[in-house]
Image 1 (cartoon, rainbow, N blue to C red):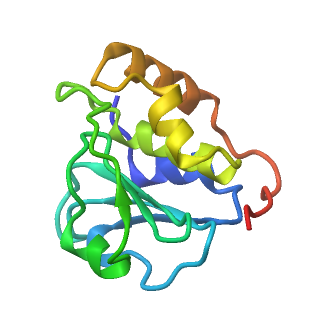
Image 2 (image 1 turned 90 degrees about the horizontal axis):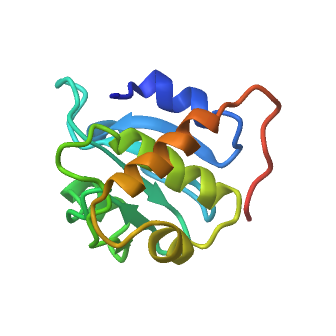
Length: 151
């Protein structure tokens, strides 16, 4: 199950500190403590290939479900960012957007980043992780007013 930018927006739009879904060449140039966004690693001129997310925990936390390093555009936005280096999503999975919704939702609800990365998911690509993020993704809907900010 793949996800579009519209699918991802619909799951997180009720969070005041969610900045939106972007292609890598249109990411916000400024952001504040507690903000989060999802970006595709492809520029807007291409169709999109893989979703990643950024969480502003003070320095910036880049999360790629495959555990890959941040692209240059992210490094420019947040030169001293932290990043996960663990592959949670299997290479055959198409759930990168769902992983991003999982991370952003929990961050904006106050879950510490390290708890999401090291307590809630298994530290390797697995069906267990894929099933967990699918379950969370299907429950994440914004039918109500915006949810308050973290900071």
